[in-house]
Image (tube, rainbow, N blue to C red; front, side):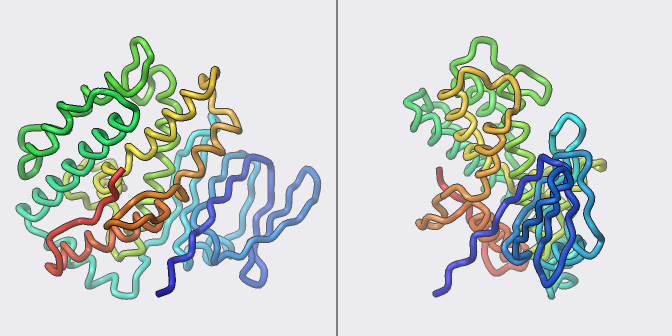
Length: 300
């Protein structure tokens, strides 16, 4: 059986002109005129950080046909937007119909599975770090349909209190470091999830739980939840081995950009996270289509 090819994540921090020729990404570094090439079929994600990066529409077209995600960063070097295909599957119309017609009880059940898996992975990470996780173990077994008793919120408060040995740490987008590292890692994870959802023929905007009318990636925000502890583990390792994580340095970004390629265990087998995410989104479609009742999520 052929194994899925591990796609590459490319990071651009210098001014460059990006184009395509013979199904290759052609990178011309404008400061040195150095030219490099990468097969487009090998690319899973591109992160464009520098404000002086130019790319051609022909390149976007070829990357789109390969279902590659293009992440654009703002002037503060933080991921801002995602360029992704409008559709990524030959059966898109039929698959979208299954998604649109999913019943409320089904979506509540899928959200229950998602939160059970998320809390379980949070407990596993605390266990790996020799930290207290008894309450998380208990709450992961008590999640109701649609998480009606809000075990996710209870678990989050306990989890963030115990994960980092940092006085006064509070999880929030604009709170103290290492929230900056978590934000960056989650943005990469979100792009991976959106890419996989599109590749599985689903619309990332239509969530099973999240329903913010201003959010174009509600379903991605739903399905990435059990994967967040894998990002947390990477960030914890960075914090544990670094005296300075106040700023997103080049070295820290390089460690976070490895996230799509880290090994996770899904359905009893090791797999790169990006490949595992594709298995998760395919299993989600099978739930929408009535083929299966279970979403496949990785176990940390």
